Image (cartoon, rainbow, N blue to C red; front, side, top):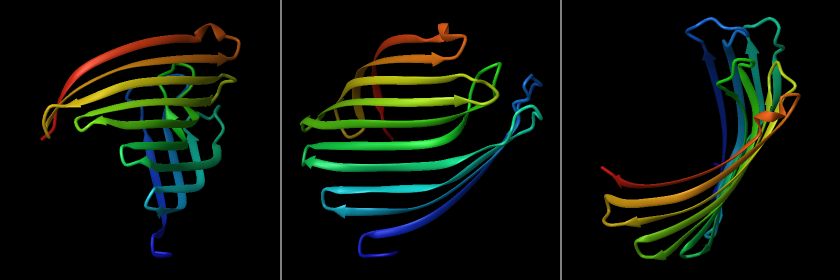
Length: 194
């Protein structure tokens, strides 16, 4: 505890990824991430945390160099009105990916979302997101941009009906730029909470 509403923290995470099947490139990876940051309720209207640090990924494949980079994890909530919350999330980390040409990517992402309680049991949500991935053992990078709009109607404390629509577009920058795409999807569902 640093102040009345300010807390400091340090975290360390170690991960070992092992592929069950051999592949080229070798997908086995050893990862380390160390973060230091603060968490606070800045005011009755603002709360959040921000942490920065170091990340490293060692690849078992000798053809892939060790990746070292700046790490970031942050989130903030602003209670714009008693019924409306604005949220911001930022993250930078190494992520394993499903690709035959590369075992992982350095991913930097952000999301801005707004939730509004239109009625006592009806919550509307909209969000936008951006993600940039820099692939290991490859010159490829991708940019993904998404938009989402949805609603949750609470029938009771345990049961709710949800629905939403999502638009996603991805651009790829390398010789195989044909892997760019756009996608629209919609869903509806019933949730039960224990």
